[in-house]
Every structure is written in C-alpha cells, then in structure tokens.
Image (cartoon, rainbow, N blue to C red; front, side):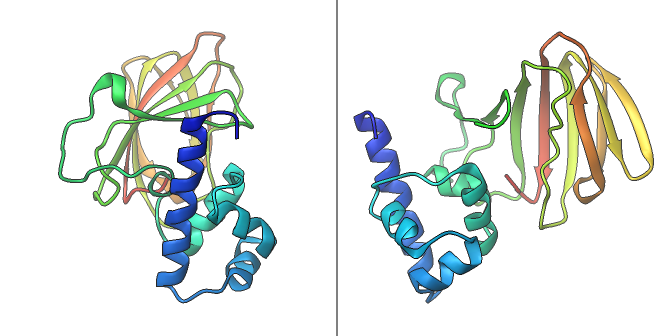
Length: 189
C-alpha cells in the first residue's frame, strides 16, 4: 500500500469481507474455493495487507450476493444527496472506463451511474449473474448496443431500455469520448 487512504480503504474492505464471511459461516478455505483464490490471499485481504483484483471483487460480490460497490464503499443510505465532488468512482484496470456512482447507499432498489469511456471499441458489457433491467442514455459520443438479436446505434440524446442478461455488447464507435447515464435495477455493479 502506498499511502494512508489506500491503507485505510484496504483495512475497511478487509473488515467488511471478514464480517460478510463470518455472517455466512464460511471458513477462509470455503470462501477461497468459491472465489478461486487461495485462503492465504483472502487472509491477507481481510487483514488489509493487500487488495483483490476487480475480477476477485466480482466473485466475492457474487458469493455474498451484493453489488461490487457495496464491497468498495460504506455509504450512508439515510443521506439521499450525492454531491458532484463526492461521487464514488471506479476506474477499471483492464479498460479505459470510469464509473461514477450517482445513487446514494448500497441498499437501494435502483443503481444510477455515469460511465465515461475515452477509447473507442471497448466492449462495456459485464456478465451478470442476476437478471437486471437497464436504461442507458447517451450524453456525448456515439455507441452501438447489441442485445438479443438486435443492434442499434445511439447518438447523444438517445436512450435504450433492455434486459441486462440479453446484452451482448455496448461499444463506443467514434474517437469522441462516450459518456452515458445508466440506471440498473436491481443494483448489479
């Protein structure tokens, strides 16, 4: 860990994972087996000594049946306002994509976020384990979206609503940055 805020975040994540694991009566070995990592790695994560990859976080979220955001942040569900300078953001290490959480709390029935994509031709579809309903609104840029047997091109101002499980691809198709407003229910990130 390189700085104090990273250290604090790692410790908070570790404590949360430890609590979730204990609440479900799972041993480190049992959880490690489900997440496909070693028990010693999970022990280090729970003690705040290292941080899991995004892929491991997704697996942990799947096992604990919570959105990934819930593992990363402790938001006050009682406070309905999310100020622009205080949004939770996640930058994916494997893609030039930034997610900004707009909805407050992690126990809400809907999740809203802004997606910013700087590089064209990056497929934004994540494989989901839970059925979702998604609404995407293009703020800037142009994107192609494919779901079911349909393929659509959306420009700034266009919106689409679809079954999240049917999504095949969401891709920026121009050199202009793609910015979208996305609503998902139930929360899935």
